[in-house]
Length: 264
Image (cartoon, rainbow, N blue to C red; front, side, top):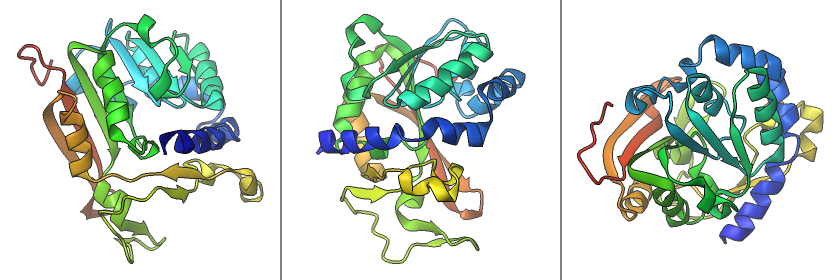
């Protein structure tokens, strides 16, 4: 199941992604200027849990264009990105060069990092926005997270809230509950690639669909706990278009071997 999902998503993420980021973020030089101007803003959810990034070893799994990893490098962190898309890597490396920072980019499936044994252990593993649905078995990805964290290392995850992901729809006139929504749906379903709206409409037929498995909070928290990661905090954010509904969450979990403070 996971192999089928990975192959489909790899094909999708290597089709016109670079063009999409050029349309959305601007040229690599323009994006680099934005990130250098205020590197803390893209990291606003996490810096309080990271402490001082300078000197920290941080790995951003499924790190896409480096929009979070590059600001971390600007602030002095030693950053590694792992992502399956060659086009994401191309854009990210051009941005990092323009931003005059060094970022290590591994173009690979995060479940099969070819040089994982050489990487050592990291202070922080960061995963953010639209990532867990690319796995049909959460145990596989959280095993990787636990394995590459150093003792007392920290896992930070921000993603779409399961309630929003499974049960809400944007009608164009507001956010509403989805008809026939099923919070406990376990099917692998086809969907548009995340950057579809950044591609001109007449070119969208060239894009490939992704295969997604949307998870409940219970499934996600259980999979993390099974890897011996200690949950420290779970923050939920209201939806920007309707604050009666949740939109995102941030989870912090530690590979505890000593008493690690929540705010470093």
